[in-house]
Amino acid sequence: MATDAFEEIADTFDFLDDWEDRYRHVIDLGKAMPPLDDALKVPATKVDGCASQVWLHPSIEDGVVRFEGDSDAMIVKGLIAVLMALYNGVPVREVGQIDAAAELGRLGLNDHLSAQRSNGVRAMVERIRTVAAAA
Image (cartoon, rainbow, N blue to C red; front, side, top):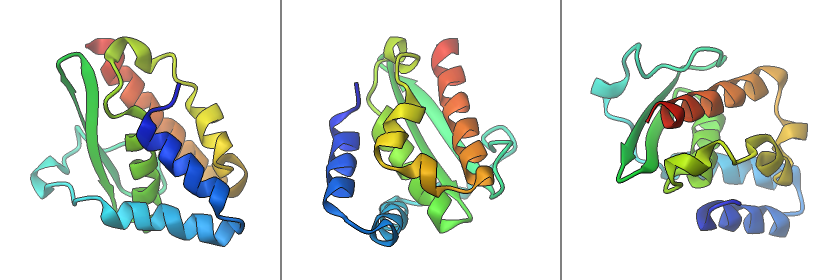
């Protein structure tokens, strides 16, 4: 049930043999993201449970989830980009049906992230789900 953007990332991961190359790709995805406006880096957008500073600014447009984000850690910024690919453009009613752990598992991220990073990813997913559920 992944978006085309997420499938593109999954295809790239299939092509990359080495985990170091995959790790660099995640970082490159983060580098390609536009920075989050500093005015949006406020306590209301900060995600608790992340080892790094993480901000997610979600919105619902025409019944569809959209969010932008930022982090002070490059790998986490890349993980935000992966989550954006997974969730941006998804109808609100379908957000809860996405098994983020399984989708990220397809990329091998579950096996290669520290426990703290994994907790941070879960916190980001929970924030996205909460916003969608409230819409």
